[in-house]
Length: 234
Image (tube, rainbow, N blue to C red; front, side, top):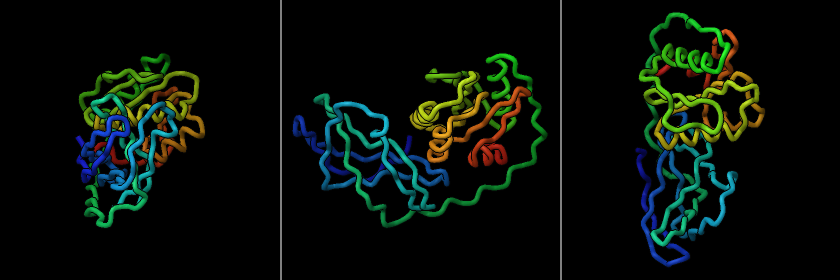
């Protein structure tokens, strides 16, 4: 469970009940916790409909300066109203301590792939690759993704898409959001590649993207995937 930021008063516009709310913190790509800075003088609004583009807010990491998009802070009132809490534009004044440099990983033997002929082969190839990276307890994911097949390991949620359709931006966002709710990292493996907007979105969210070739070898598509391939779980 992520650390919580400072609590602010939030009043429900429907029943006028006042609550104390603290926005959750999420892990930046640099490892530091980040959380939206709430506006103490702002007015919460009732969420009456859902639009995917309105579910996100840009938050800047005070440690490394990276800006990423995270879910808008929301609070459920006992009266049944879902409240969207106002976010302030200014970052926190005191940045957290820098994250220590990770130790260099030990050398690994070359990855031994398995040829992909079926969807099951794609899952097997991905599981072998994750084990080669150092992940343990690999299993079928508890939650079924909207497309493809979900597999999980200790600290990681991966999605394998064995279809001939390039992965969409929604596919990437759904994987990232599910992993975030489970306090896990995530990675996407696709046979057919990715739509251009899916690649851009993955870069913004810090999601490693891989393409599986028919030999069963994952090929890194973005920088996050290159880093994961180089360092594994170290």
